[in-house]
Amino acid sequence: MELIQLIFLAIVFAASSIPLYFVMNIKTESQRILSLLLFTALLTYGIHSMLESFEVINYDIFAKLCFIVAAFGLMVAYSILQIKSSHVLTG
Image 1 (cartoon, rainbow, N blue to C red):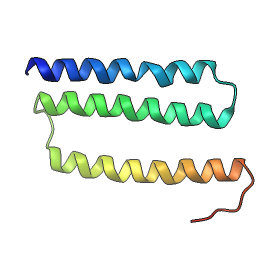
Image 2 (cartoon, rainbow, N blue to C red; image 1 turned 30 degrees about the vertical axis):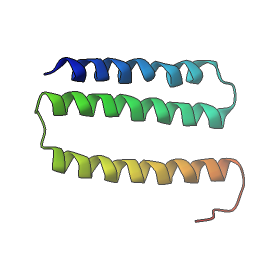
Image 3 (cartoon, rainbow, N blue to C red; image 1 turned 90 degrees about the vertical axis):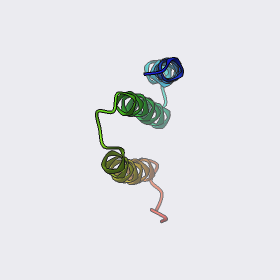
Image 4 (cartoon, rainbow, N blue to C red; image 1 turned 180 degrees about the vertical axis):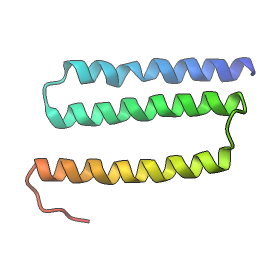
């Protein structure tokens, strides 16, 4: 593992603390949900980068799985926010 990869992982994990701070201090529910989704995405990306750096995983299969999970999560989050704001689903 190279030094640049360690620095990158440290930056990603440090950046994930910002949305976590917002989750704890924001009172609006929709902003809290979006901050939680951003925190989860950054944390997942950091873990993925770490696993890839140590060559623990097969990148092709893992990337496809992450894409499917992210797309499904985005659709679910969009649907929940639309239902909570009482708008008609447009999509």
